[in-house]
Image (cartoon, rainbow, N blue to C red):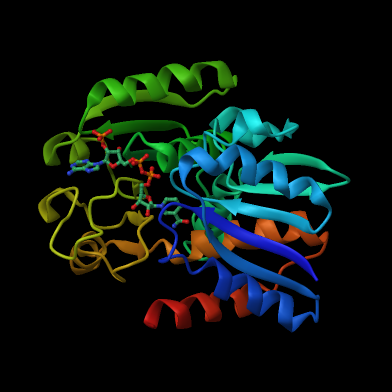
Length: 279
Ligand code: NDP
């Protein structure tokens, strides 16, 4: 039996096995998808073991998304630009890294959020790994302007500098996160994306409710709790909202397509992910 897995440290919370196994079983593909805890100093040996012919690939999550890069034989242009890998395809002893977070974000935004970023202004909260994938996606999709807000503004500045080599036309600004600076950058028809980890605790929110104008779309990458405080308050103020589950499912679907060379059953994966979250 061929194998797939999601690796991370810790990894017990991951709902990827439920989502992918549902897709594999639906199509009758004889592959088992596991959850593997890999401690950081065992990462090189584990990655090398993927060349043994048994493995089709892996998903990679925190804290290995960057550390895995020098251990691979090649990178997709998305992974190269973002500087992080969340999917590895193993084939004929060769390991190639992809980043499907950006694609997953865009697919979720367009299909579930019914939002096309081309020509739009965006307030992006966060400057970590997830923010970088979202920024790449928004720039590639032709956003007019993205303001990167972060608690440590120098990290946002580093992200802007990194994006300067992407050869994109999107205007990039940085600012310290605070409710006034955020609301000043948003107008009707705009997009607010939370790519910080603020909101994982149900009482936390990255921006005050009063700073959210009506008529915008608010996307929170967090998918547990559902909804986050940010999305609840945004909805109460007349904004449209999208939580992080569609992005998670679509990045998984894009990974499935890389491994299997066929379209993923997105609805089945979505239902399996929702069920796994409830347990
Ligand atoms: P990182 O650790 O790389 O970045 C964390 C970000 O959150 C930084 O911008 C950090 O700011 C900010 N932050 C953390 N704590 C605070 C705080 N108390 N106040 C203000 N800002 C804070 O994490 P990731 O980028 O990997 O992940 C971010 C979130 O996105 C997570 O919640 C993760 O679950 C989610 N995610 C969802 C995905 C999906 O498919 N739906 C995919 C990937 C991630 P600073 O730099 O100032 O420390």
